[in-house]
Length: 66
Image (tube, rainbow, N blue to C red; front, side, top):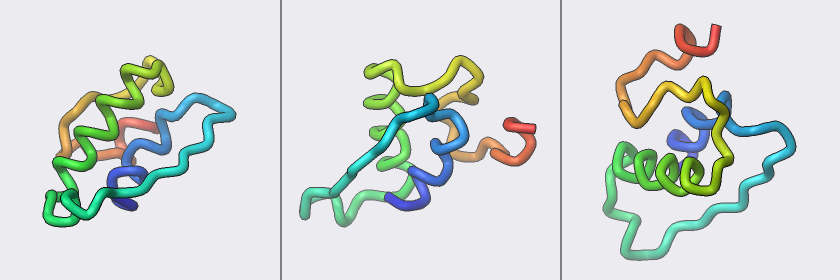
């Protein structure tokens, strides 16, 4: 979950605070699956900026935010 949040942080709208926890059943999920679920929820809640690079796990964050 930390990696998913780290990858999404550059695109969070200013002033957004996130408190997140996983259900026990999600402990076996991959980091990529958690990233996609979190991204979907943040996008649905309009908490990501327009410059968000998309759902791809392999996006180079350093390149996309510069």
